[in-house]
Image (cartoon, rainbow, N blue to C red; front, side, top):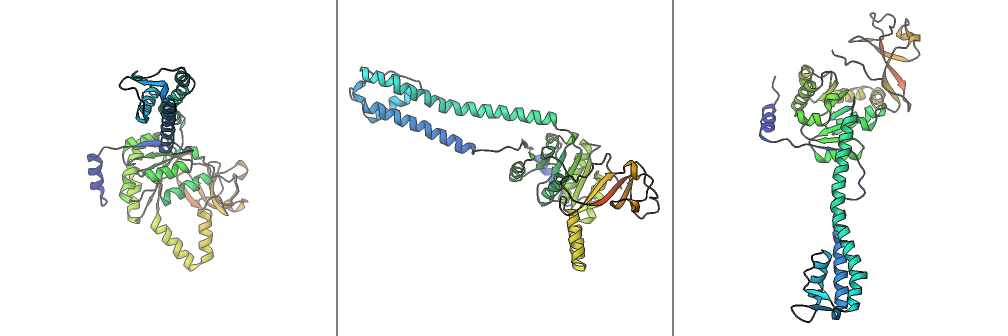
Length: 364
């Protein structure tokens, strides 16, 4: 099955070089352009002050071309002096002018150089510091979560997993939009700008070492290509993908997705349930919003629960995960609980409520 636009995406990927960039979250005190503009203004101010100091004491200077020293000559002298060029065509000859050069012009020259050279050094230092942070981030990133697409679905998915205890430092966002990555880094997540259908971009997000991958792209064909690439790079990660059309869900699973969520159908079912029973719709919406009200939690069976039936537990058990099968709480095959089972329960959300991560991805 070939999705619409798949050939166009492939041709575009072959014709254009991929550009990508990793951005780590940071707090900018002031925009870099504004910082440079401020320092240039300070340098010009120093230049103007120097020129007027020289012009005020113009009788103490001599010009080799003529004996007079006008305002233009004063600016010329200030420029060549502050830049340490010093042609020598205009020189101080009186003691007062020379003292002014020692105690006023020289400090202004040093200040001028500090402003201009300091800006360059700060830019180089910032670049080195950013490279160091990036290398350190890559070397320490393990078992993280990669989210492809920072739209409405991607943001909601990140909020859900972070509400269960995942730290923001363990989330990497991949999106082709620079504005989306700016928003992600502002929220505290690391971001990679680039086309997620290319393996080079996903490698920048260290996807090959990720524990779980969330694919929330805007187009279904893009989701298929991203899933294929991600599964090729990482065979063990859990991949969850979202599609708009239900007919494309089997294709996502064939591409390597462990779970596929049909966003349009899910929203439609929730709308229909809310029409039939507004209270039931409110409960379902509460269940899918982690961290508030009621939460759906997956946890392992503890030793004291072994040998009991799901109805005998204090928690409200919805399903039992046994091996690769998900059994209902009233399924006859469940019988009594085993130590290797996992339970899907409904609990009251608390600050310490967490979803226990799966050891192995479940496949249907």
